[in-house]
View 1 (cartoon, one colour):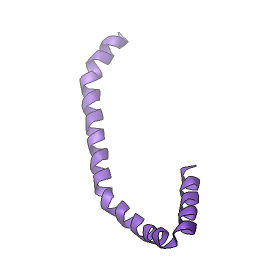
View 2: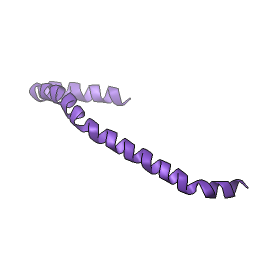
View 3: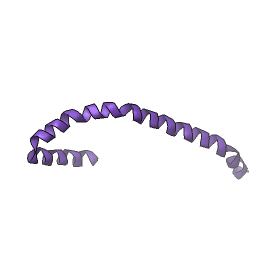
Length: 66
């Protein structure tokens, strides 16, 4: 659904201001590539916090299971 909305918004932008739409079409992949390392770091930090949480909550889960 998000893809369809994005395509429709791009078509509207292309009709209203085609130079801006073409600039966005070429700049979007570059911006995505620049932000990719931050997404990877964020995912790594999220996984580390989940592991720490699981380790700290393990004794309480064991008590609850008994």
